[in-house]
Length: 86
Image (cartoon, rainbow, N blue to C red; front, side, top):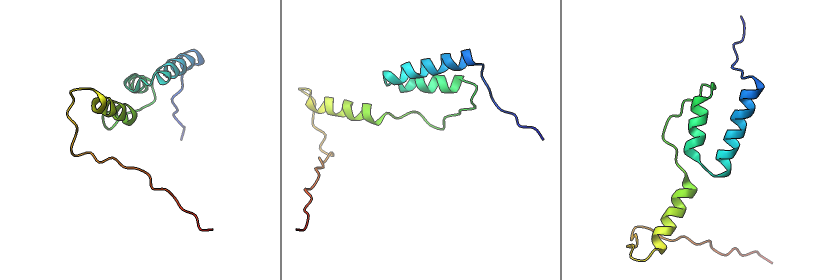
């Protein structure tokens, strides 16, 4: 019985890591996904990517832009102050 491992030569690995790093720096989730799918890693995503930070920022931008109707189904949550026993 022998092991079958996926391996890249260092030049290809270095290029992949550099490109992944660049995509991470600009938060390009779609590009990161493409790189992982194209790399010989056996990566097979099960769903579309969801960027929760981007969605939250887009939602906040819609709320603060003039002429945008406010979403009546959204309730703002605020942290309660914590009290400590003395």
